Image 1 (cartoon, rainbow, N blue to C red):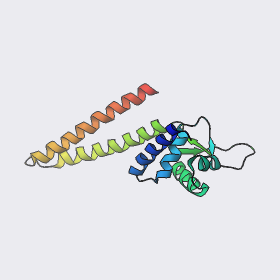
Image 2 (image 1 turned 180 degrees about the horizontal axis):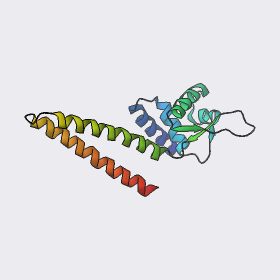
Image 3 (image 1 turned 45 degrees about the vertical axis):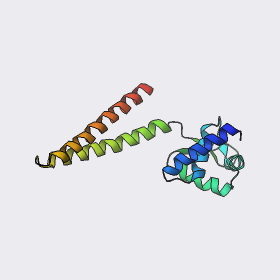
Image 4 (image 1 turned 30 degrees about the vertical axis):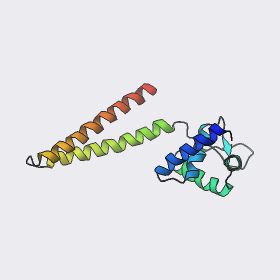
Length: 146
C-alpha cells in the first residue's frame, strides 16, 4: 500500500475502533472504500499485512452489519467483498429511525412531566427540538441526494 492509503486506513481504523469494532475492520473498510473493484480475502490480507483468518472474521462481521457485501464471481470459490453501494443512505435512514423514536419518547415524557418541574420540561423540549431539527435537515439532504 502507498503512504496515503496506509494513513487513510489507519485513520478509519481508529474511527471504527471508537465505535466498538476491531481496528482491522476499519482498515478493511478503508481499503475497500479506496478500491475500484471487489477484493478477495487473500488480496485484503496481503495488502493489509494481516492474516487471512483475521480478514475473514472481520469481513464477515462487517457484512453482517451491512457495511460490506460479499460478491460472488462465476467459477471462483473465493470470497470477494466491496463496500455496500447504498451504505450512506441506509445508515442515515437507520439513524433517522432511531432519532425519531428518541424524539417521540422525549416528547411523550415531556408532556407527562408536571408543570412544577419546569427545568426538566425545558431540557426535554430542547432535546426534542434539536433532534427534530437535525432529523429534518438529514431527511432534506437525503431527498436531495436521491
